[in-house]
Image (tube, rainbow, N blue to C red; front, side):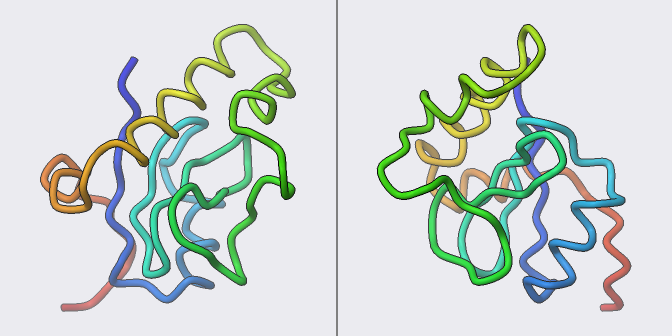
Length: 108
Protein backbone atom coordinates (compact mmCIF):
# COMPACT_ATOMS: atom_id res chain seq x y z
CA UNK A 1 0.00 0.00 0.00
CA UNK A 2 1.33 3.40 -1.00
CA UNK A 3 1.47 6.03 1.74
CA UNK A 4 -0.65 9.14 1.35
CA UNK A 5 1.28 12.38 1.10
CA UNK A 6 0.02 15.56 2.72
CA UNK A 7 1.34 19.04 1.93
CA UNK A 8 1.37 20.99 5.20
CA UNK A 9 4.01 23.54 4.23
CA UNK A 10 1.52 26.40 4.62
CA UNK A 11 1.39 25.69 8.35
CA UNK A 12 4.00 26.55 10.94
CA UNK A 13 5.54 23.48 12.56
CA UNK A 14 3.45 23.68 15.73
CA UNK A 15 0.24 23.83 13.72
CA UNK A 16 1.42 20.96 11.49
CA UNK A 17 2.08 18.87 14.60
CA UNK A 18 -1.39 19.70 15.94
CA UNK A 19 -2.94 18.80 12.57
CA UNK A 20 -1.14 15.45 12.62
CA UNK A 21 -2.93 14.62 15.86
CA UNK A 22 -6.47 15.13 14.55
CA UNK A 23 -6.19 15.08 10.75
CA UNK A 24 -6.70 12.08 8.47
CA UNK A 25 -2.99 11.14 8.46
CA UNK A 26 -2.28 7.51 9.35
CA UNK A 27 0.71 5.42 10.29
CA UNK A 28 3.22 5.45 7.42
CA UNK A 29 1.76 8.51 5.68
CA UNK A 30 4.12 11.30 4.60
CA UNK A 31 3.83 14.97 5.55
CA UNK A 32 5.60 17.78 3.72
CA UNK A 33 6.29 20.40 6.38
CA UNK A 34 8.13 23.71 6.58
CA UNK A 35 11.27 22.07 8.02
CA UNK A 36 11.42 19.06 5.66
CA UNK A 37 9.56 15.78 5.27
CA UNK A 38 8.09 13.65 8.05
CA UNK A 39 6.36 10.29 8.36
CA UNK A 40 3.63 9.39 10.81
CA UNK A 41 4.77 6.66 13.20
CA UNK A 42 1.75 5.38 15.11
CA UNK A 43 0.55 8.67 16.67
CA UNK A 44 3.79 10.63 16.31
CA UNK A 45 5.12 12.70 13.39
CA UNK A 46 8.80 11.84 12.91
CA UNK A 47 11.21 13.76 10.69
CA UNK A 48 12.80 11.82 7.82
CA UNK A 49 14.40 14.68 5.91
CA UNK A 50 15.31 17.94 7.62
CA UNK A 51 15.41 18.87 11.27
CA UNK A 52 12.69 20.19 13.55
CA UNK A 53 12.42 21.39 17.11
CA UNK A 54 8.75 20.34 17.09
CA UNK A 55 8.48 16.97 15.33
CA UNK A 56 10.13 13.83 16.71
CA UNK A 57 13.14 12.01 15.26
CA UNK A 58 14.73 8.61 15.79
CA UNK A 59 17.44 8.52 18.43
CA UNK A 60 20.98 9.17 17.21
CA UNK A 61 22.46 6.06 15.64
CA UNK A 62 19.11 4.26 15.27
CA UNK A 63 18.34 3.25 11.68
CA UNK A 64 14.83 3.37 10.28
CA UNK A 65 14.92 -0.42 9.93
CA UNK A 66 15.68 -0.74 13.65
CA UNK A 67 13.08 1.91 14.48
CA UNK A 68 10.46 -0.04 12.51
CA UNK A 69 11.11 -3.18 14.57
CA UNK A 70 9.26 -1.51 17.45
CA UNK A 71 6.01 -1.33 15.47
CA UNK A 72 3.61 -3.52 17.48
CA UNK A 73 1.26 -5.02 14.86
CA UNK A 74 1.86 -7.03 11.67
CA UNK A 75 2.28 -4.86 8.60
CA UNK A 76 3.07 -1.69 10.52
CA UNK A 77 6.84 -1.90 9.96
CA UNK A 78 6.37 -2.32 6.21
CA UNK A 79 3.96 0.62 6.04
CA UNK A 80 6.35 2.82 8.02
CA UNK A 81 9.32 1.87 5.84
CA UNK A 82 7.27 2.52 2.67
CA UNK A 83 6.57 6.05 3.94
CA UNK A 84 10.23 6.60 4.82
CA UNK A 85 11.26 5.38 1.37
CA UNK A 86 8.80 7.73 -0.34
CA UNK A 87 9.96 10.64 1.79
CA UNK A 88 13.63 10.01 1.08
CA UNK A 89 13.59 8.93 -2.55
CA UNK A 90 11.36 11.47 -4.23
CA UNK A 91 12.26 15.10 -4.83
CA UNK A 92 9.97 17.58 -3.06
CA UNK A 93 8.37 18.60 -6.39
CA UNK A 94 7.34 14.99 -7.01
CA UNK A 95 5.95 14.67 -3.48
CA UNK A 96 3.98 17.89 -3.94
CA UNK A 97 2.57 16.60 -7.23
CA UNK A 98 0.99 13.58 -5.53
CA UNK A 99 0.09 15.26 -2.23
CA UNK A 100 -3.44 14.83 -0.96
CA UNK A 101 -5.49 17.99 -0.66
CA UNK A 102 -5.71 18.13 3.10
CA UNK A 103 -8.17 20.49 4.75
CA UNK A 104 -5.75 22.06 7.17
CA UNK A 105 -7.80 25.13 7.92
CA UNK A 106 -5.50 27.50 6.05
CA UNK A 107 -7.10 30.63 4.66
CA UNK A 108 -5.76 31.66 1.27
